[in-house]
Image (tube, rainbow, N blue to C red; front, side, top):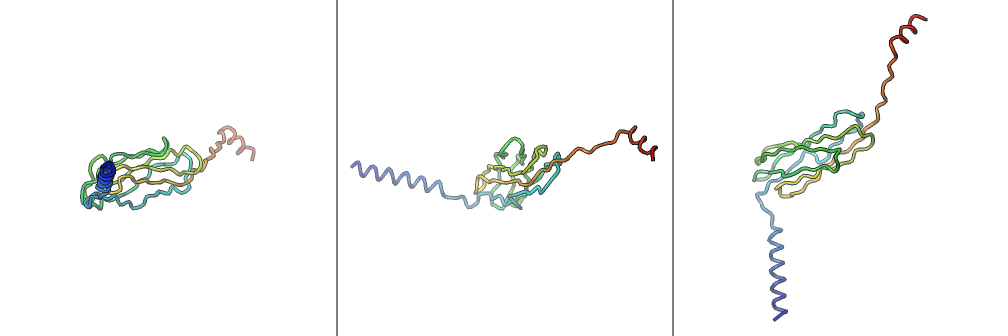
Length: 147
């Protein structure tokens, strides 16, 4: 009897697990133009704002519930309203370009899409910009007069 109850319990658990794996055929689908934004080589303190463009190619409205950067230097913003099927949206990312060196960060997007978690990446390099030397006006005039 115990063996029978164990088998029934195992069958019930397996059935519930498979039922959760069933996918909604009408679920929203986030199709990105690109899931990587390459900043290339940019100057220190340059504009760090970029965009990830996407379209909902599914059959139900897409709702983005959260976007999170991998650190405090990568700040995403996303549409709060549902994106209707066939409509497009933009996830904006601002990277703090005051940090010199390579960029390799991620943005995790949570939604009600068929794939509920999507990871986007930003890459590139921030190069240090040396401050320009300015010649004081007095020295410049004196230099010109001695010529």
